[in-house]
Image (cartoon, rainbow, N blue to C red; front, side, top):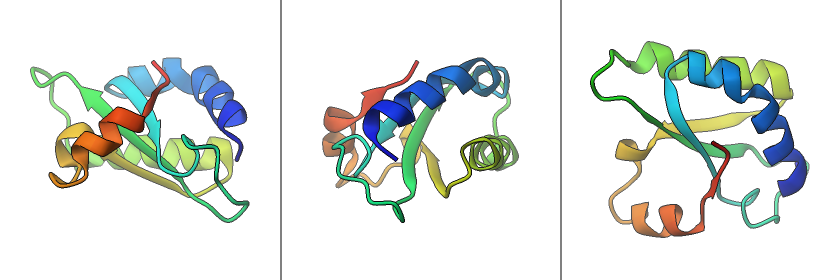
Length: 98
């Protein structure tokens, strides 16, 4: 999926993703660089309110919702779960959806 299309589709889905517990959504990886191939997955990370309950169940729920709506594989994680050696680079190159 092209970068512009991904951002447009994710912005359309933003109200539901927020309602599911995300406070911010970011695109990174090949789609953020606009280098995605037709077989590429969509790499995303979210922030969530640490004062609210948010578990793996909620994360998987968001992932499944996005996969169903976008008809593609989604690789979703939280900002805090990004690998420490990659985190700074991922954050620097990520595109904020909301």
